[in-house]
Image (cartoon, rainbow, N blue to C red):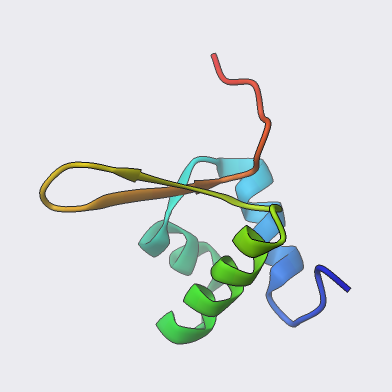
Length: 73
């Protein structure tokens, strides 16, 4: 299943409600989750094309996560 796992549904819900979301914001929304677990879940969801990762070329680095194909205003 694409969304199996303890945190994936909650991650997708947070992205639906608050997108775009940066890593530390998402970590705050989820509560107790390690950086490694969150990063792994985001990579898996991105690989399954359920999450989009946008990297901004700036210093310090800025990365936002969102749901794909969402119309923005």
